[in-house]
Image (tube, rainbow, N blue to C red; front, side):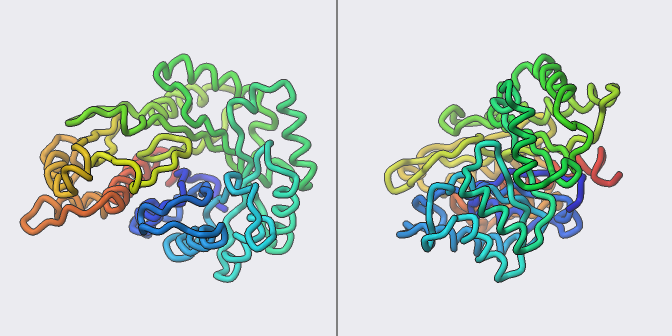
Amino acid sequence: MITKFYMPILKTKQGEFLALSLLNPNIQGYVVPLIDVANKEFNNEEGIDPETIEEHLDTVTNRICKKWPRTNAFLDAHLVSDTSPDGINPVTYIYNNLSAAKIYPSPVLRLSTTKSCKEAIREVMSKHNLPEPAIRIFINDIMSEDFAGNLQALLNYFSLNPSGVHMVLDLAAADFSNTEDFSDSILDQLRDFPEFKSWKSFTICGGSFPKTQLLQSGENIVPRGEWIFYGKLVTKLKVQEFSRHINYGDYGIIAPGHFKFDFRKMDRSANIRYTHDEDWFVVKGNSIKLNGSEQYIGLAKDIVKSDYFMGERFSDGDNHLKKTTQRGGKAGNTLVWNRVGFNHHFAKVMRDLSASYLAS
């Protein structure tokens, strides 16, 4: 596993994986997604309701195999840890599926990982010779008085040293509004972070994209709080004696957390999300059920004619945006625009990061 990369956190949705697969192959090797395996729910993208956890996990692993058949990925099965597909631990089930295609993402550990999942992860790591797992830490973890001891106990359980572990500090939906003070606060936490300079890699991620219902109809300019925070933190860290390289990760163009959405019971508004330097430019329409998907064409035109648009050659998503505005362009559906928005976002982050650390 490389040590300098961009870490998008994915929710195992089809649009996200399509967006990854359509990235320029030259940059795919620097993208290391953290895949959060969601629990069983209605599949809005394919219009099916998986009857069993086995069917759901088969869908998830098939997406990985088809759209991201790489080992440069981390896999977190925390959300399905209380299930028993085919009577076995979900970690074992998932890796049995992936190993058939010789795909071995690195497992993700948490301080809260259950004993049964830790046992399954240890067996999977031994069976498939998987080095370099990740440990995913949250703010509540580092604020605990027992943090250092709990972290060491987890390392001891797997007979690991920090030099062979990728550390992920997930700030999730932290308040990024005051990036100056928040970056100072996190800097203080890093100063005392156990073995800070010893970890194989160290990634900080988070997300500030608001929930859709908080966006107004029309044009919205939304600050990219986690990106602005990351820039301030890295700048401050460089002048510290304990400085080291920090990778960037985010939740893309959706809010952190898991929200179950079933379009059979709930309505959504058409919207397109477009990532720029320190903001998202979001154009939001009205109810899809009442106004149809044709409104996506008008929303695409709003993006393309704006000063934010980076040109149809910038990414596959940008190319699709441009084509939608031309004669004969098709409106598409939510899945299409999820893919378009994520693909552009991934390409934009990669371009900005390549100028700072991916190529160094």
